[in-house]
Image (cartoon, rainbow, N blue to C red; front, side, top):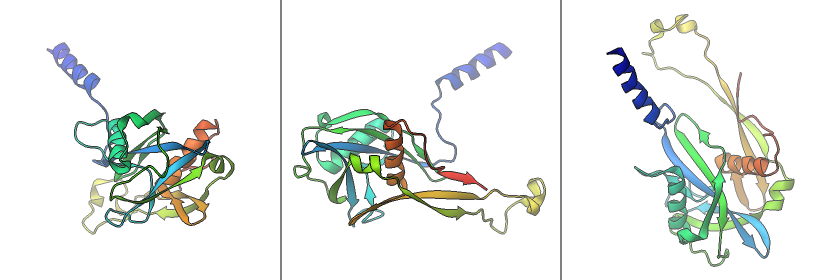
Length: 215
């Protein structure tokens, strides 16, 4: 009987697809390279006033729908937001993902083919598009500025259920937020973080900034 139970457990675990603990919302984005007059650029979106975080810079992407893989979500959102065909999206692969207590965001990098910046007609979620030459990011590092993330508790927090009670030493975190100084545009936060990591990967550089540091 024990072997039967262990085999049942083995089957369950071997077939299970792991997800981050905590019930975070799942998102996926596409970091698109595009040819501009024979030079490789990275394409960015400026979010319209009809969506969350209006005016911010982002990559094409959005929430992962039920039954959809992260890659499928990135492709679908890019097709919808840029009004391109799926055949115009050449996924090279996946880079590191971001996981917070509220979001998990995957990022796929690749090429937008057979189009120009002028030919792209984004949907209403996108206010405008702009590109930055890849060479700029190869020669400019982002600035990292820091915020402190501090644990706060409600009055009914059950301190009696943990060791040392209300004297428990909670860990705080210092979070580094990257910023690129661009003329007339904003590039910071998650989009800047993906951009920085992409450049580190293609240049075989070690990550030059710790994204979160326990203190």
